[in-house]
Image (cartoon, rainbow, N blue to C red; front, side, top):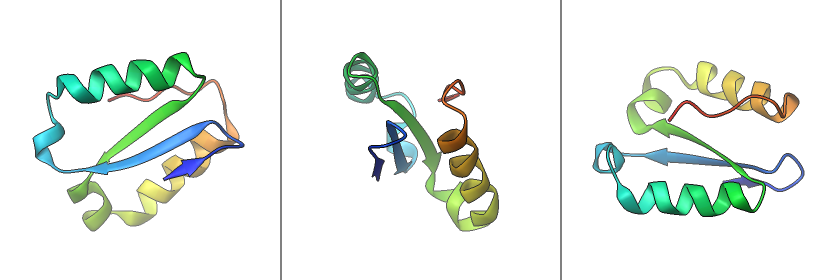
Length: 69
């Protein structure tokens, strides 16, 4: 999902993305274009959707926050 105004991309991934060179390369390219990529595991969304939504809202509101994954 993309919020162009906030320059934020939200991805929901499975465990196959845990150590993906492709994801790292793509994230670097997107960062070079001014985007931040915020990634959640599928389980995060299924277990605590409210926390996921709160995190996304925080990132949209604060451009200085940087993704942890």
